[in-house]
Image 1 (cartoon, helix red, strand yellow):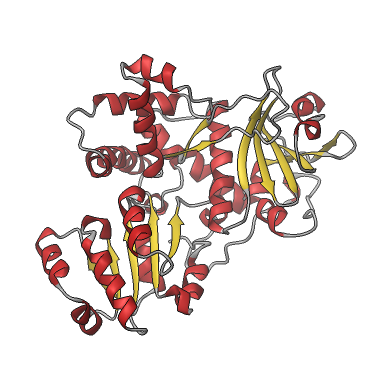
Image 2: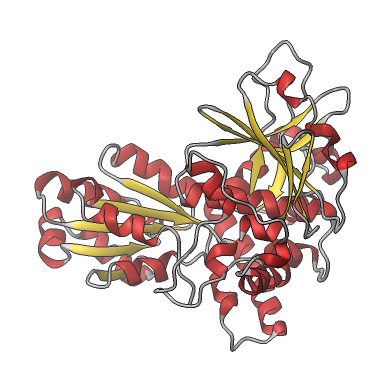
Length: 416
């Protein structure tokens, strides 16, 4: 069992008047049910997956819900959207009842929630485990803030050790990364009783289940083959610019259909699109989004591969790690990539109210000043101050370039 960053946030919210209805959404198997049952142990658990009982629950009126289930967890509630109207009615008539709604389909669940429960609900997205979460081994273990999240939430730059080898948490952080590098971040794969083959089998089954259940929830496909082809194409090209027309041509679809399929992958939390930064309209900047697969274990299963990450896969792993940590701590920040027409590229820009942080991601075990070339002069393109730039790599040394404005740091020390 691994502890979750978001656990205490959800518990605190549930005890407030604004937390009478809580929604947990996210990809299938990210631990929504386990988390809800841990945090809300005194709530009645109701699975809407059961088609026999589903009609019974949907026939209950608000008074019956208030009397029989004044505090309940409704799992896979998007299977019976009418229940959301029932919960709304209970909310509006009585102050005591409290509910937790779970669903693995962002589109089907959140559309109905926003239509019916606007102003009445707190929504939390549950993602695969982050590196700090993978470093825990029980619900009571502290999930320590990474240097990255401290950077975004504290006024001063956190102290960074001169070498990764001096980090007292190195064995724990390295173990978390080794696990992610093999299997990704899904909680079920943290079971120490599973063999390596069982873990890879779980990932393969996950991909099949995703196609057979989640995708069919989102769209009534008569033929899944084009969707599967696009899934493999996207996995192969993670951390690259997405060209809808070119991708569609390669798999025999029209551009509009390829864009619609891409939205399905986003809605089901299999990937996210990193937008291009274009805040300064006077500069010639690329406007194309970058694809980032959300979990490396799932990516391996899609591609039927094992072993060392490619450079692009490494970049996606680190960008999605930062994305998950920002989301888990509900940090106010926007994420972008930047590419100019004359060849300057920055893997990740993080914009906050008072400025930007820039990140270059290198898989190399040895970094030198040439790796900072795209970060030099970057501030001239931006419309806010550039607070600090970083190179994240496998080099254990912490180094300063360009008068200390660029810090090269080991990625596990920074994110773990």
